[in-house]
Image (cartoon, rainbow, N blue to C red; front, side):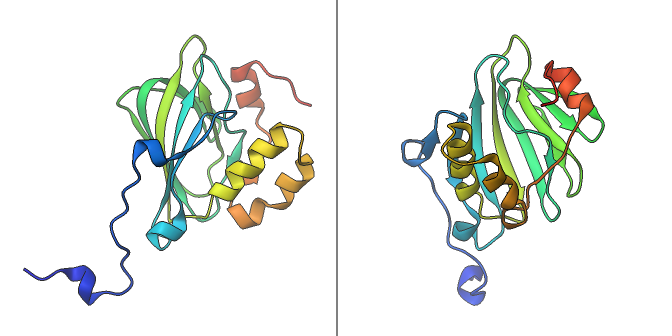
Length: 169
């Protein structure tokens, strides 16, 4: 049987990220698994583990990529367009390009999810920037200025704010 990867230089070699090798960003609960460069742009992926009721991604959309959420444990609230869905362990949610979304652990629950973005976007630098911004080491404007680079465009969502019991700043 022929190995098709030998015949197609556009394919990438298998990617194996050992659990203990994944970079952990504890302040945002992310484990960085594979960035787009390791898959030649096919996908980028990370795992998120959120404390009870913890907020994670603010409302945003991606213009060119779908985002897949597979819930590994707990319950995850996800803004999907103009509604908030609660996904439980074993559930799968795919958000298409252009649709506003955000996510956080459901009130009274932790949440763990595998997140896959396809086609892939170099996102690890984005997550490092989020960590620095939340720590006050970067101005929020720096994150906003990087929206096009990371295909992450921030939006306002009253539905999400009401669901998460947050106020508009």
